[in-house]
Image 1 (cartoon, one colour):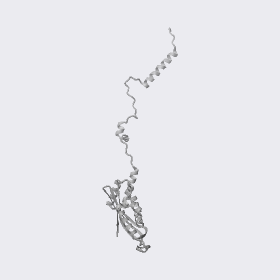
Image 2 (cartoon, helix red, strand yellow; image 1 turned 180 degrees about the horizontal axis):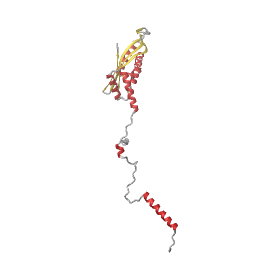
Image 3 (cartoon, one colour; image 1 turned 135 degrees about the horizontal axis):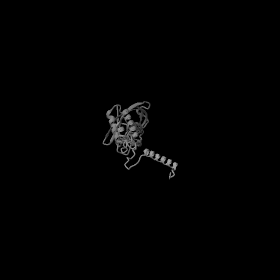
Image 4 (cartoon, one colour; image 1 turned 180 degrees about the vertical axis):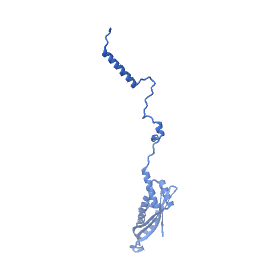
Length: 240
């Protein structure tokens, strides 16, 4: 033969061609019109959506308003207080709710607690001639009536020995709002020991050792728009 044939070289060339052909079959070729690869996590299969397999997420552009748990608890508490104090009196329940609407700080229970304390303070202060205490609790017109009675008693030299024993009953009778003025009426049934003596120390009224029952109906009032949180006693009525 005229030319020398390198057998190992030919063998390696054949192997290289076979490898290239297999790579072509596996990888394929690109001609510039291939479809972009599909990302399965970027879209939702329509058939899955139709079958209800997709869970819709909340619209982030419309956040859900937070629930005010404190307001809910307060409302439940107030409803319980009204139910207990109104005792089925629908008109009274309506009146208490009207006051709550006008005065967000109002609590029927807290009011009753204050009214109970106020009664004892007033009757004791009246017996002792304590004008300062009376002036803090009484409306101006009511105070003038109490002060006039105290002054007349003092002018005669009379004194009152008085002991407040307690209550047998305290009942919420009425509640209303009239032109931003809240009014609440309470009926008191109390026991006291009262004895009035003249200037010589002689007993002229009452009994130093006898507990007697007294019953009064008082009305307290407050302007719901006022910054002053205190209620004033605007009327008193002694019941038989």
